Image (cartoon, rainbow, N blue to C red; front, side, top):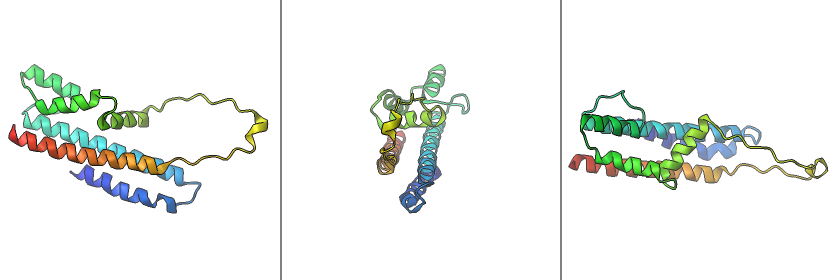
Amino acid sequence: MQKLYSARLLLQQFDQVDQQDELIRPAYISAYADAVVFHLQGVMQALLYEIAETAQLPQGEWKTATDLRQAAEMKGCVIPHLNRILALEKDSFSWLSQLNRRYRDCWLPELKQADVVDPSAAAPLIPLARDSFSEQQQLISWLENMQSFINDLRQTMQEF
């Protein structure tokens, strides 16, 4: 899939963020991370379309896996592959659930209240940089999980 390839290329470019100026590095980190997340969501949408096509369901009547399941039920169709996706979405610790949360955070970031800081104590504080390495590793993990999930799902779809 083209989106998987694009996400992989973006993650390769993510490695070079450390070469950027310190002042603009956070912007690059955020841009690459968000772009990878958007591509991975695109992969999931393409997979849902592929499942719908395999089940001979009309496209465009749904936007999520839950919507697709409802469309399948209305047509009297059972799609076991879709149940695997829905199970991953429901499990709050699964990679897909985490990816979906991260995608929602791109659109609706949580508002955090600022901590009250004593002005006299603020001078010696050193700002900490974001841990881009762990974020990059998380994105790589999601990409690898997505690739293996798609491969497994396609194998079972051929058998079905």
